[in-house]
Length: 126
Image 1 (tube, rainbow, N blue to C red):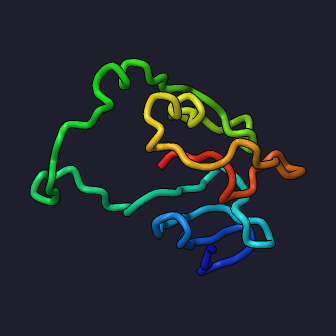
Image 2: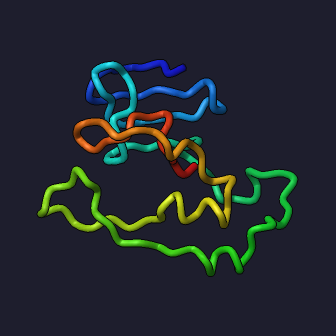
């Protein structure tokens, strides 16, 4: 269930069914997420790397071999203007076999008439 500070073509909310993850992005008039562009979905926006903020630190099973298989990509959002620069990032479907913990969602989610994927059902990276 999503709770909104603003509904329709823009929203800030949280997904209480998925670990209270905060989300900021574009919404449809019915309050569903409208798609990839300008949408952020993840944990705290102040993720710290400082070891003093952490406990139970241990090696991750996804080491250098997984990192070396990752393919950073240049791409354009379907909704972007021709004058907008390329974006840099990863494709969730390509990361899922390497590090499944960072990908969630359902690829069977349909696109709307504008080619946007209605969230929370689309595939996303954490």
